[in-house]
Length: 226
Figure 1 (tube, rainbow, N blue to C red):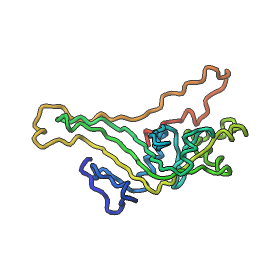
Figure 2 (cartoon, one colour):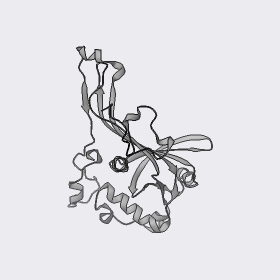
Figure 3 (cartoon, rainbow, N blue to C red):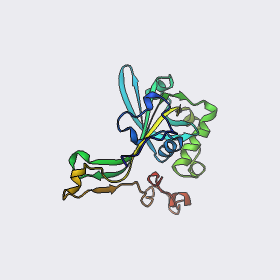
Figure 4 (cartoon, rainbow, N blue to C red):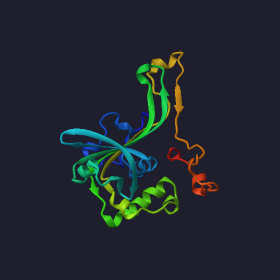
C-alpha cells in the first residue's frame, strides 16, 4: 500500500540511495533487494562515456553481495565500466495497473531496485564459476546439458561485477488511493494484476528427430513467480 512507512531497522546505506519522493515506498532490507534482483533476468546499466549518457539493457545475476553482467571482450561498454567509472544498476518488475477514481491517482504496482557503485572485471580464474552460476540461474542443469565453451569463446567473453553496497528498493502494492471525496464517485476502481508466465517449450526446427526436451526444460517457469 502507498501508506507504508519506512522501517527504522533498515536505513539507507548512503544519502544518494535514500528515497526523497514517496519515501514511504522505500525498502532498504538486504533480503528484499536481493529477491527483486534474483527474480529478474533483465537489468539496465547506466553510465557516462566521454560526457554522453548510456543505458544498456542486459542480463544479470547475483552471487552473494555482487551483481554480475557479461559481454564481448571488445565491448566499449565493458571496457569503460571496468575502469571504475560510476555505474547505476536498476531492475524493475511491473506487477499491476492501478485504476483510481481520479485520473491524477492512477498508478502501477511494481518492485524495483536501484544500486550505485563502480564496476570491475572478474578475474579469469573466477569466470567459469560466474558463468556457470548465470547459466544455471536461467534453468537449473543447463550448464551441464549444453556444450562447454571453447577457449576462443572464453577469450571473447568478459564478466563485470559491482558490489551491492549502495542499493535501495522501491515497491508499491495494493488498491488505488483516492481523495476522500472521490470515494463517492460512480467510477470503477481497482487493479489489473500482471505477471510473467512461461508458455510450453518450442523445439528448434533444426533439432534432430528423437531429441526430447530434458526435464529441467519441461519443468521450467519464469521469474515472474518469484
